[in-house]
Image (cartoon, rainbow, N blue to C red; front, top):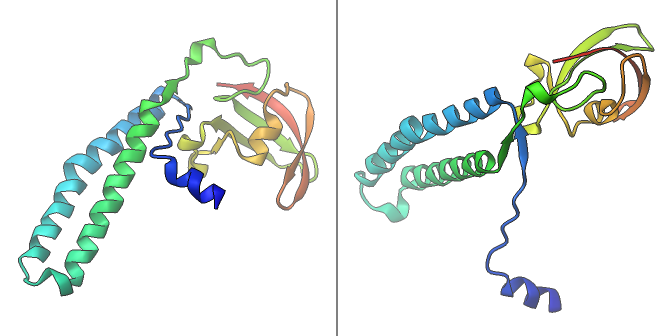
Length: 171
């Protein structure tokens, strides 16, 4: 009962989370916001208007679906705007290749099988495995952060523990 009382008295809980991004990542998020606002928002509004023209709204599933799509779109736009509002752009000129940090491109060798892989450690919002960009909160990135070239690191992943030798650090 006490928890319910406390929760019912909280009007708004606003937690600001800083996100570190590259200039390119920031630009992509801004382009996505512009696309959603200028293309998707009018498309969803047109779908609502079309469904509204079909008559009784109380039994109109098309109208309900269009309104739900509008709510999801507006939520996505709001989350993206919050993300960029709390973003801090990383100045790549101040980064060092002495040890693995966010924005580091790391070439490493799997000690068990000798296979070499290369990943860039980025903010989670910019992670894209196809582009070989892994989020800083992933187990591999966490295990590499702070280590230097030549070190062998043991990283706990869902499949067990893996050993990687850091071959090269660049940007």
